[in-house]
Length: 394
Image 1 (cartoon, helix red, strand yellow):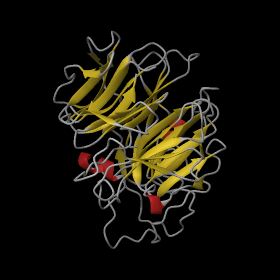
Image 2 (spheres, rainbow, N blue to C red; image 1 turned 180 degrees about the vertical axis):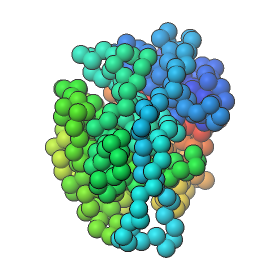
Image 3 (tube, rainbow, N blue to C red; image 1 turned 60 degrees about the vertical axis):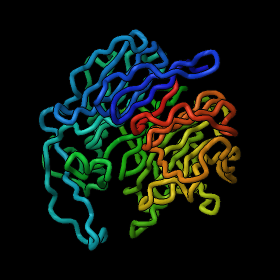
């Protein structure tokens, strides 16, 4: 049973401790600094926070004493010669079918450390970090040093090996609006899934490219977007250009993979080799950002629906969570204890988590809600937190 909840917020890291009858927040850490993601390494208990310093750029911070003290680490850095093909925010007259112009190149720099993931028990020092502009970094010494995964960076789907020269393939990794605040329109890796059966099996998801899989520890990568549908591409079934918002897998049944996508909810029963759209717009289970999978039953998952990309708020006037227990064939609205009037909350991609029978989510209006009965009922842990970027049990 989890004893801690970690919140990454717009104004710092908030830790909540489980008490006999309630969860109590501690004083905020990294006060005033946006924290993109905060999580606890289940192998050794180290706490991690991804800091988004407006002036100094992104950094990682870790605590090895349960949050009593924190150590800021040197920022991840792209190696000399790392370049990418520049993307631009589409204009209203943008035609994705038009012939591509000559590529424009830019030296890579880390704009945002968007996500962290931890290796398995037999990989004690292994950590992963996903960044904007679309780099996967790997550490094998507990985060002291980091190295760019070049096979993914050099993948043909994003132009080939730009260390060696100009592009040899068309770049199919498009930009994400999440990067616009950094003055660019570039892709970003926001989801990293490590197979608990074999740490060499990895899934990553990038906005806006899709899902990729490695079965050899990151030495090679292949796209995993069969069955995906993107309703704003000329070919909705295109191999690349999909916009996953978050991807996660069931710990006990890791071939059961869930994806909340810009264009709906998708489920895979074969490790992301094939996807099936399981949205039910008539129930509201369709557009949104986060998805959480049950750790024991891969058919069970939760989402927090939103109205639409153009209306990022709760559907109607009431906030609810949708749960499926049959692989997405049906969805149940869970509203008990959640506000059903004048609610305009939105829940971002990392801001929902599940642990045993507990679920927790935080919103961009600073509300944090907890369920201890698998979502059947909810209670508020606080209304006045900073806007919440991530929620993770620890």
